[in-house]
Image (tube, rainbow, N blue to C red; front, side):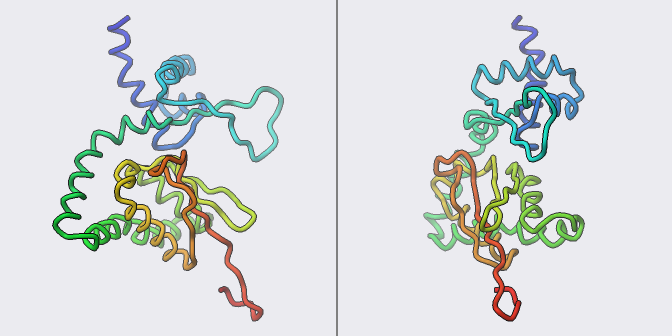
Length: 223
């Protein structure tokens, strides 16, 4: 049994990484994506559930479904995220502490702005390549490519950008400038004020940013 488990470990890591990159997934989607049998995927999912790496959730459906029980989706837990993050966290925190000690608050802030620059650098290009996406969906695509597993949810007042994973959450817990710089960059590319409502870095299960709808003045101009 030990030999079998060692042999299966790389495949199990592929399952975990696929969920990390693509967000919460059904067993069928994982089997197709990884070119595995449904039975093999479910065996790995059962083991990952037992060890607390993933959790099962009810799938959110936006259109009518036929008869039968809704499929479960599998998402990473905080423990699952830690498998990818902790090996780099200590080094990153030590580096930023050094920056803070030698360069002060402004140096940390400058680093955070530099790190968040991928948002503005990529926004126009991704939007041009995907005209069917809304501005918020364009951001979700960019963040997902950077490992955030992002999606968009419609709100009565606009849209909400949801990030199921944050690759810098443990570092941002001590250095919130990282989150602040991201939020400001989002606001700049959208041309409006946005508000970060929750962050994984501060104990929430997901990072959420409220993107209000554009308002219009009486003359019809956007405000």
